[in-house]
Image (cartoon, rainbow, N blue to C red; front, side, top):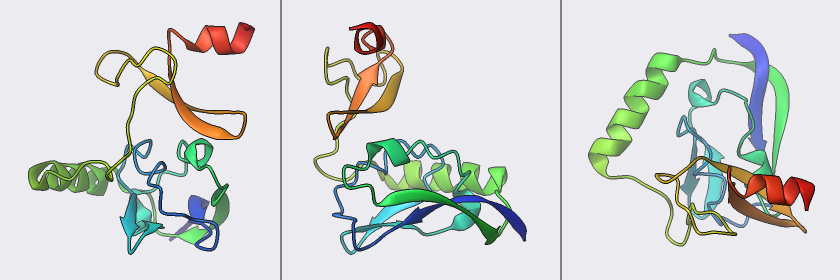
Length: 131
């Protein structure tokens, strides 16, 4: 056990939109019965890339005692998901909200604009920063 940062999901605020699932490169967040859940804490690296995608603010980071992060468990988990054909929840798209580029075209970052969670590609990001 270790004291480290881990994602906490407020079920009262979670609408089950699934926007937090895609930025979690480790696959720690899944939708269960219409709510986002961290099912296996050893998969959550605590980086918090999912936080900015939640339109209701249901996600936060908390520092607490939990199991150690396990790189090998992440690799196995992602291999199993790929074998099972598990992808994003229905209706969740990963593409730049400005130009429409997808994640296989260029790097995408989760961003919040005027209270809305969107994806922005690295080519369009400077326009958001500099206007």
